[in-house]
Length: 607
Ligand code: ADP
Image (cartoon, rainbow, N blue to C red; front, side):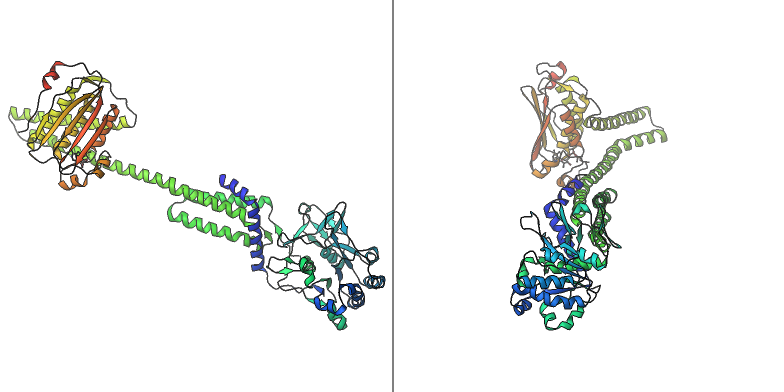
């Protein structure tokens, strides 16, 4: 809709009108071919004639001598594009009036006064000899593409000189008018009242034939060339330069020749008409809708190729319409189509593509989650499988049976809790679950996670040191926090070489506690530090070390700490080790419990 509105805004602007004009000229020039035999001839008052007759002052006298010869050749009409509005030499005027009265179907020119206050008309002497008066007005704009067949100043109006000449040449009665057309004899001219009866001129591809006044004066026999034609009399010399107008073919043409071309247009009956506003709007609407639909329904290369083909088709449409006598300014249609294409292509590119990328990311997240579940579940499941198989296959003594049963029990519990943790964190992150709000001692979670991590530390002979544990309580989900701290301890051990040290320290700052886990492991570079909390991210170093992992642990830890309104700080140096610090708000810093009190000074050594 916005594209359509913008296109309408542009389509009705001045630059668009200029573009449409240029497009018209191009279509006109590229389609005009020499066709019909001209039915008009110019009687040109050229330079040579003026010199010969001794200047424009002797024009009426010369015309009075030449016109009877021309009229004797029986032309169809005589259209005089000269201003005969003043009296001159009485003898010459009388001779010219006489000559005119001997001619059939004479149309004399009338022009609008310079100040547009009225008409400049021939004097009565000449008017008496004329069958009609016609206006000789031709508007530049700046190219003379159309001519108003009707011109009115006040109550007085005249039809165009060429139209009157045509009417008289067809011996037709008065011109009949309807709001849309003019009827001249059998001819219906599509010139609407709303446009001042403007009609596009079908300029002939070749110039209208012309004979000069001098030619006829010297060679009276040539007057026969006017036989059966409409004769247009007018100046063609350099003084008529002011009267010359630009045509769509890019040539300057005198007013009299333009009127002769209008006569030819009427004679051919081949009229160009403007596309109706409804057609222009309808086509633009269809162009905009289709351009949008292409990117809505199609995607990838098909959409781009279809859009290009559609635009090409729309560029050819005005030309095709022109060939079928309909003039459609292309600016409205094409600006609408281009705008809609650009907008929908950008939308397609940015929005749809982003959606596609998001769905791809979701897909890969899902695949990785599956990978995680299977990977992490494999160890406890194998233990359960192995133990249950041994129990069912062999007759074991009671102690062994008990040992395997315990193993099955503890591994299945571990599995269940792991799945639960994973699902809980997912739900918490999605806002589908509320965080528990239990109160528990910091020492309880920390010691529990240390106990769990100790197993691996011992295997690698890593010295797991714990400083004094800050007395105080935390609020939240104990199991989740235990999982988070255990994960950090486990990573510290996992990514450290054997026989190194992992240090766990607590520090209280106001209402916060800082739990730092320091190792002497492989460390991470700045790039890794930016991404380690991303799901499934593993540093290149970790991958290459052969240490197994899924890259999901830290993202879960981060989510758990975030849910407890805490934060994680990390500093690390490649080859020297890393420090992960969990900062959590304390629920009640003062309270202590006696059990954890003993553990504050406890340190765990490996081995
Ligand atoms: P996992 O350990 O299963 O790969 P984590 O999410 O726990 O996944 O850790 C993400 C990545 O962060 C690890 O793969 C590793 O590259 C890096 N990392 C985490 N903790 C440490 C550490 N203490 N020392 C060095 N690298 C670590």
